[in-house]
Image (tube, rainbow, N blue to C red; front, side, top):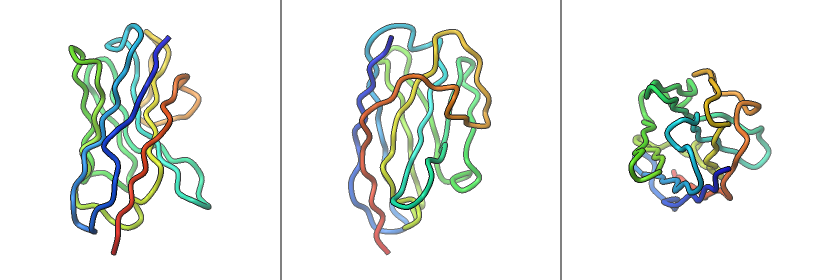
Length: 126
């Protein structure tokens, strides 16, 4: 069981940067796949980035080279550094965690994640 709380969302100009944080409480943070998803109005949910126990990461093609996902196991915190932001990055961003010990793919799949945060809004203006 794990509880997730996102923070760091806000408004930024195109080309700017923002860092999202996901504070986790519960157990087995280091043994879970962790991911960021986003959903914009009128669009389907999209897997943005994930990180597994070994530190290997995966990214959606749309954010590759601009976003970096990382985690601090000692602080039980997941991060998403977002650079070179574009208006199409505007969305509600959600932190998600998988089942402790389960494998996950660097191709981000919703079914691999059981626990979800409440979301934090990111708005990128033109």
